[in-house]
Amino acid sequence: MMLLFISGPEIFVVILVVVMLFGAKKIPELAQGLGKGMKEFKKATEDIKREIKDESDIVNNLKDFKDDLSKKL
Image (cartoon, rainbow, N blue to C red; front, side, top):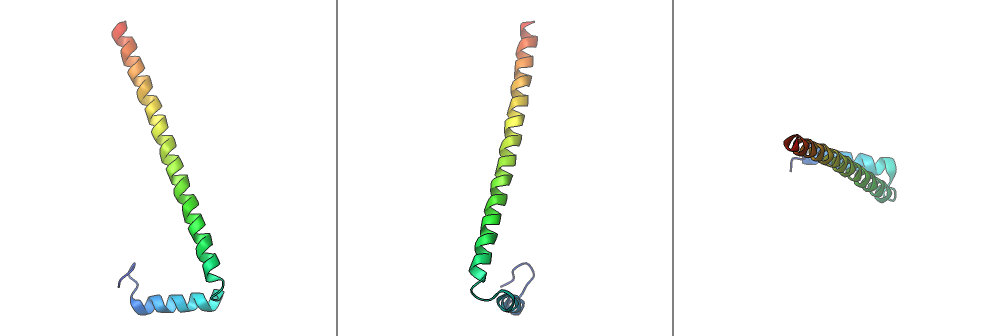
């Protein structure tokens, strides 16, 4: 299994080091914190995308309004 150019033995060493540094009891807490952070990051990116879309919709509506006015005049 190749995950980001890391082979099986290298993954094993990384997991071993993490267990030695943080302990087996602390790993679930770290994973939970990491998951919450990823969730917040995803939520923030979705909010930014939504704001950009809303702004572009406003610009498009203004262009349509301008075109309608120019046709009537």
